[in-house]
Image (cartoon, rainbow, N blue to C red; front, top):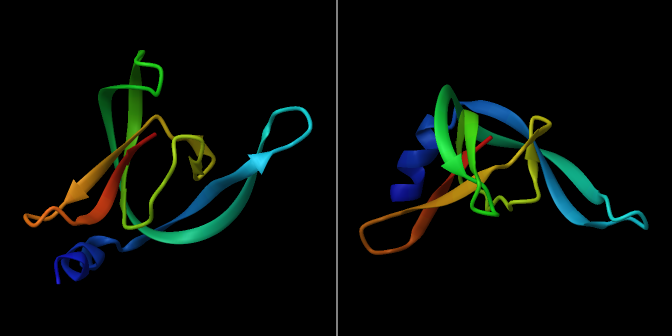
Amino acid sequence: MVCSKLKRYLNQEATWGRTTGKDSYGQPIRSETMVACRIEERIRLTRDEYGKQVVSGSTVFLVDAVGADDTINGLAVLSVMKMTAIDGAVIGYEVLL
């Protein structure tokens, strides 16, 4: 039920570049799919996977589990935070780009 409430607000689409592996040069190999999401353009400070403080220009809300090596609309994922219901179940993800 909670997940359906979140899905009601996911009225936009984005291209999710999910990292599936690395090529012979060490570059990520991605498969792209369209996902339902909510995109908010706002500037926030966050920490990347190495703990360095970086500036995020967009926040994306979605129900798919996005990884730190993935991209959304061609932009690198800086940070991923789980959104949980009161019972502790993961209902979605907040992704900073």
